[in-house]
Length: 122
Image (cartoon, rainbow, N blue to C red; front, top):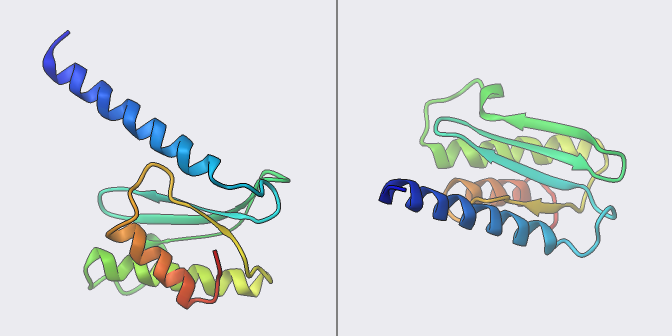
């Protein structure tokens, strides 16, 4: 096995371990809906999922924004603001922030700050 394949397998293993660790920190499974984050190279997606019934309550992404003339952090913060407003419209106040395999900095952190400014608590 070449060095690159071994290195990539290590990275994938570390990523899966991190995602598992983050998801298991939620001690109240089913009590609060969770905000699942997906970050691609160009866009950021967030959705609020109710795991007790297994369905998405509300979702928002950078594709839904009309103004895209900003840096990726500003767009992520705006996505968080809009998702927070939509969640308050569905009478959600407290959620669990599931960042998945992504580290809590940059766009993921900006999205979380936008959610807090939008009125959600986690």
